[in-house]
Image (cartoon, rainbow, N blue to C red; front, side, top):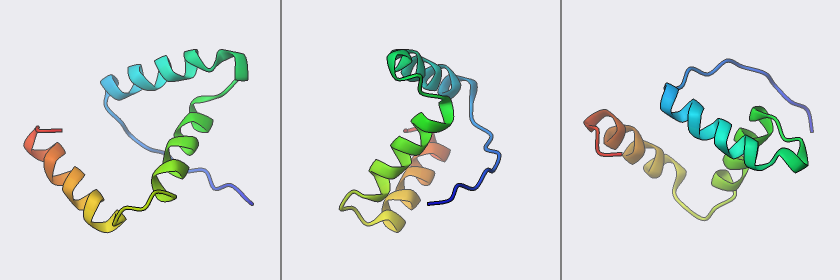
Length: 66
């Protein structure tokens, strides 16, 4: 499996939560990238309608209800 690098802009609040998760995995020496990849892998391997779920999440985020 090859990796592709790309930049992502996220809110400071999400950075703080991501850093907390990364710190909780210090024994694994996990990087931010590895934590994000694990989260995305779990999401895409779940049995949900990804298109519908992403649309819902974007709409909720824009309305401030997420």
